[in-house]
Amino acid sequence: MAWKSALNTSALSLILSLQAVGTGSLFTPAEAINSPANSVHRPSTPQLPLNLQTAQPPGQTGNRANSQQPGAAWNNFQPPEQGVPGRREGGGTRGFVCPTPITALIPQSTMGQTISAKPTFFYYLPAAVDKTVQFELADEMDKTVYKKSFRMVTSRGGIVSVSLGSDGNAPALEVGKNYQWYFTIKCSPQSYTDDVLVSGWINRTALAPTVKTQLDRSPDSHAKLSILAQQGLWYEYLATLAQLRLESPSDTSLATKWSEVLRSVELGKIAQAPLVASELTPITKK
Image 1 (cartoon, rainbow, N blue to C red):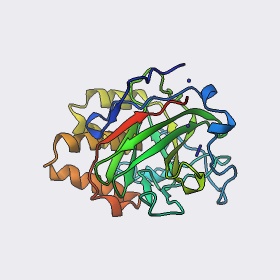
Image 2 (cartoon, helix red, strand yellow; image 1 turned 120 degrees about the horizontal axis):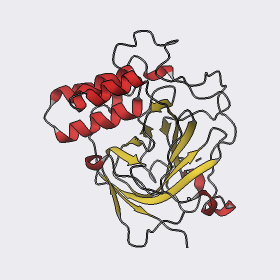
Image 3 (tube, rainbow, N blue to C red; image 1 turned 120 degrees about the vertical axis):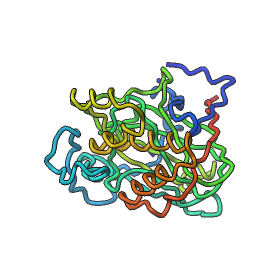
């Protein structure tokens, strides 16, 4: 369950909802969290054989058949060969302790691309939660870059978001680098073996100047969606579409797009899940 300057969290109750998809989670510096007491119990070696290719930027077309069709490239980006395999679904040993399984909204390869320095991540929770949750970000060698624990409260099951947002202390992803993130629900304070974990990979890429110009000149978010899909920018596409759905909940065309993109990565079973607000309160170590 592989996630620094001091954070002022003394009276902070953070609301991270899909209504404010740009609002960021706060993170603590790595020096403060790399002690054995705070170590994350995640697989230290791959659980499955790796036969993966390094992620390629959207500008390349080697494996981009039908790249003009929205969503055609979602599963073409692959994690690095030396990395730990991602895990889209997570379940604990005690289903009555935590809602299981939780699902990360990521492609089947578990690698998604972004152009954002501080992207937004989406997760499906099958039931309401009031638990300690941990988000960790690691580099390609699985060394923790940032980690944050917080109390998550939701009123019902559904799809929630966690965003690096605009907070100055949140990590800025570097262009051209791969990162692995770990999202964990701490089901039992006594044993980490009861934790529910999902993980995935993210690569930040730079847009070709011509594509950037197209995005800048797009009249609205609806027009941007097609460009984001064609470029295989999973995190931007999902965040943009989620925001549009919240702004226009009665727009059936947006609901259809949401269902289509999830089905394209074999997540159709959660396509009808509602977008749910989550209250996140940072937990500080004493």
